[in-house]
Image 1: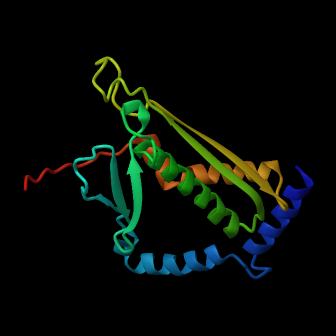
Image 2 (image 1 turned 90 degrees about the horizontal axis):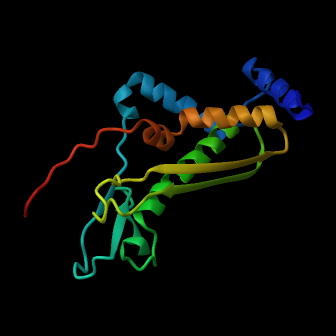
Image 3 (image 1 turned 90 degrees about the vertical axis):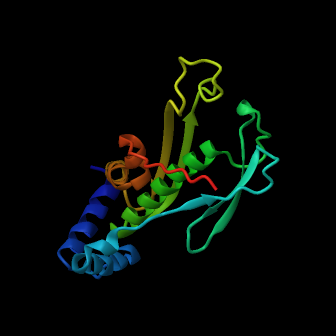
Length: 195
């Protein structure tokens, strides 16, 4: 076991035994949330959202997505040049990759904060690969959809060694909502309203 891992393990054990005050803001917030969700489990169910309402409908290559139903944060979007777009804004594949990268990096940082792992470096890079001949209907044997995704994670800490950082990584894999969703796949209900 590395020297940093021994120091970290001793700190963590002391916290578990309540020999030290926990300084983690995440732990404090999660403690309050746990009490709320134990009293009313329905409050733990949330819905994230995004809406694209067509504007400039004569331009099939650009749109704007509004994210978060409370804030309605706008993000201009475009299409990849591989399907005829101008590739001048984030594409749907970029947004999918960003969702995984943001969720995984946030999960790493929250778990690290709870465990008092002092991260000094994080980087999560995600690539999604697709053969566009399927969606363009140029080749019916090519499936429509991303065929694979690749996620590369870099971690550095000044109080935890390789063993602890590997444990942190595995914990984030288990806790990352977007990763677990993509890994297992989910049903998507669909409705159409003709106006």
